[in-house]
Length: 258
Length: 318
Image (cartoon, rainbow over all chains, first blue to last red; front, side):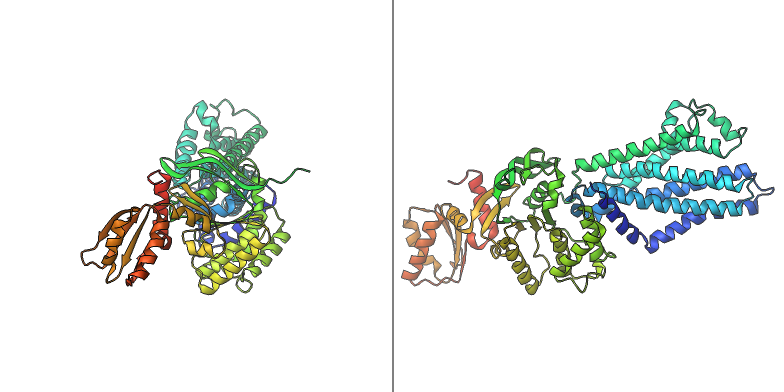
């Protein structure tokens, strides 16, 4: 694979992605946490504490907005080419399939990060937080890490599962990143969500917060932030590597009847 | 300096299965530089074979070599291949120039070079005025031209076109013909897949006949005619007095069977040797002044030709 390949795919994918549907979805996703937090501030009296608002913002921005955006934009990287009947044109060029995956991955995380960043800035502007600077920096770091890691994992699912990749991606998000990450067991330490929660607790929450208390049961909680960041980057590299390998093997069904 | 391999394509007992469905079955052939028609009805395995040649599909058994290397193990060889698949292009909002540029970049060219090559190829295929319009606004013929442009923009040594005449009007067909003749005249290799024999005959007289995933025959038009001539053949004659031929046919030792229709207007003959049947039949029709309004045999009907060759392949015929 050459470097121009993913750049070429990313340029065209970015142009194509400025569609009314994509922009509409992006606006809705960005506005969703802001609307919900504004509603909470208006309806609940006394308003939730700054720490509670930060935890809510983490859930809405990282676990809903970023993840859902990536599910929609990163997972169908391969299947959309096959359905659009353009896969064969890509797959018959050296490293073509890999270029598609990487180019679309870059665009998908670009959209997810931009949506997450705007939502973070919006929440910082709306909510009465203690240190808005720390909140913005921490949350933006988490948005970048979440986008890279979930984007890579969902791209891998898209490369492994030719049909109904989004359904499988959704099942993964609910079962593994939703249920398993909440189980106080060693297995949950394999999830991306738990790593992000530990980073959230280290960067953003006070040590006596209930969430921090619950996370302390995990053996890796006390590891420094850089280790968790490195683990998430390693997840990203492994997931992308496996996805590229799967594409290299080839054999996607494009026109089996002939 | 290493010598270039003489064979452009080598298939060594290649089989490709889709679960239990056979895509191609034990294909074994060598294709030197030149121009070839890959002819077979829909579902014959042409697209599977093309997928194998371009590394898009992995053979279940056997080995594929293009320009001396396995395209799966050494995908760099794909730079020397241009492919125009048969499938319809579904890119409603993307302009042709953007799509071809993307494909050229994926092929390894820088943005500026990819753009320049794309413009040149689209101009060459007659898309100069429409290249900035979305592909969704194009006619079927224009989409075929775009597909051709992306296949030739990187100046490949082997061009594989799958049903390139689909959707082209007579002018488009003529222009495509001209282009393909020019292409082969440049010393490059062309594989032209089609289910219409006449379309391929206009470009080349070398054929690969594929059916049911198997290579039934390979050779020039004349060689194929010779194969057919030695084979049993069915022929149906229609006319007001074709029944008069039955006496002559009954005495001929090479006639296997005859069947006259109830209205005596149609005579179906099955002969052991097509060559004898055609020679004698022509003579008798002229000598006996028999009026024949219709004559249908294997050479006028591609499916009959495949039927004959399949029977030969299976050993039902000598």
